[in-house]
Image (cartoon, rainbow, N blue to C red; front, side, top):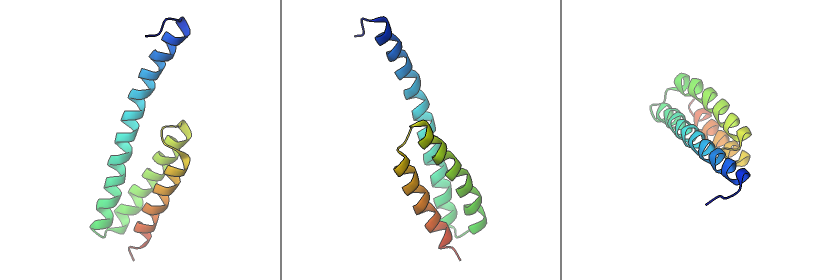
Length: 87
């Protein structure tokens, strides 16, 4: 248990950040699944629209430190390849 004032504050911050990270990661997973369902239904227009939103969300999550930058880059690359394969 934290005994110093600064350690107690750090615990409060960690709880706040953990809640935010869970919400953002869950939203990312949902958005990624929507792109993948668009790809599986072979609908390029819907896939492109949702891909743009996913790219923005992944970059924002990476810049906030919620996910690693290379993880975001890898996911963007793989999703873009799948969407571009729909021709």
